[in-house]
Image 1 (cartoon, rainbow, N blue to C red):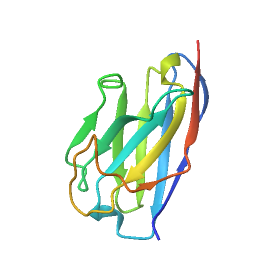
Image 2: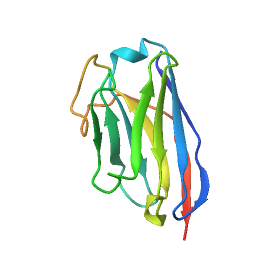
Image 3: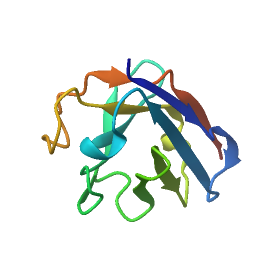
Image 4: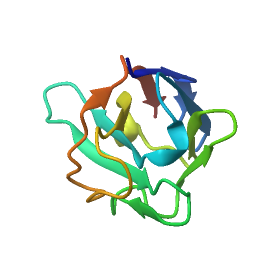
Length: 125
């Protein structure tokens, strides 16, 4: 059974930084691409970033490019999202996601079959 557990969210002032983590269990983490998504109140969930199974390629939404960095530690079964220069519009619940299919997938659309419970990120102005 695949489990994804996010942590690292919190309240930060605009311009600050946070590092999110996603601990994965239940299968061989290094065989699968991973992604981060977010959902703000009253809005649809949106793609933030994705990384291939090897970590060799990364993908970002235009709104976070140059500010956020996705990475993974396959030895520790953990996915990260380093968020710098945070803006109030980054406020959302952040979710990590994983596909059921091994190898690479479409980073933006997946499909992503497994989701964590989410971690709240609030950026004050």
